[in-house]
Image 1 (cartoon, rainbow, N blue to C red):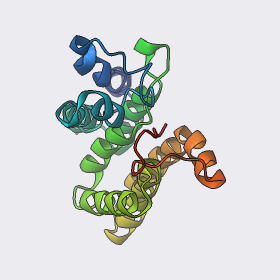
Image 2 (cartoon, helix red, strand yellow):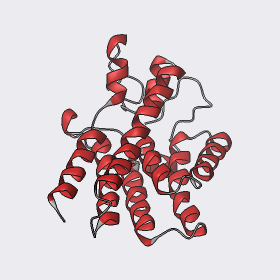
Image 3 (cartoon, rainbow, N blue to C red):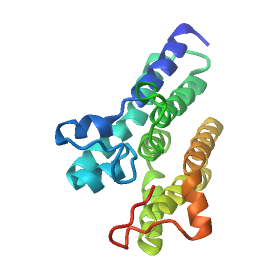
Image 4 (spheres, rainbow, N blue to C red):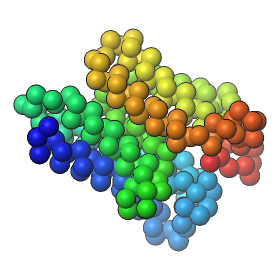
Amino acid sequence: MNSTGIFCILLSYLVGAIPFGLVVSRGSGIDIRTQGSRNIGATNVARLLGKKMGVLTLFLDLLKGYVPMLLTAFLVQDTPRRDLIVALCGAAAVLGHMFPVYLRFQGGKGVATALGTFLYLAPLAVPGCLLVFMATVRLSGFVSLGSLLGSASMLGWLFLLKAEGWKLGLAACIVAMIWAKHYQNIGRLLSGTEKSWKKPGEVQG
C-alpha cells in the first residue's frame, strides 16, 4: 500500500472522529454527553435539542462515512489495491465515530456514519435498510433493535444485488462493529429491560 492510501485511511479516521453532535449542540448550553442517553449521535441530539438539530447531526455524520470513500476512490483510482484502500477508509471513518481521538475514544455507535458508507457501497440497498429500520422501530418501539436489524439487512441486500466481494466484506466488518457497540442494548433487549420510545420518560442507551 502506498503513502497516499495510508494517508487517506488516517484522514478518514480523523474525519469520522469529528463529534458533530457536540459541534451542533455547542451553542445550546446542553452537554449531550451528560443528558438523555449520553450518546453523541443524532438520536440523542434530536431528543434533547429537537428534530431539526437531530436531522442536521444525522446528515453530517452520514457525510463522514460517504465523503472519505468518495474522495479516496478518486485519489487512488490508478492504484492496484484501490478497492482495499477504499474499504479501509470506510471502516476507519466508522471506527473514528465510535472511538474518536478528540473525545478520549468515547464516541457514538456508528449507525449514521455506517449509513454513509453503505450509501457509497450500494445506494440502491440503502432504502431497503431504512425500511427494515423504520418497520422494526414502528412495530417494536426499540430504536436500538431497528439499528441492529437495519444494519444487518445490508448484507442481504448486497447479496441480492450481487455486490463485489470487497463490498460484502466491508459491510460485514461494519455490521460487526455496530453490533459490538450495541452490546449493552442487546443485553437489555434479551432481558426485557430495554426502554421503548413509545413510553414517555424512558430513554434508550
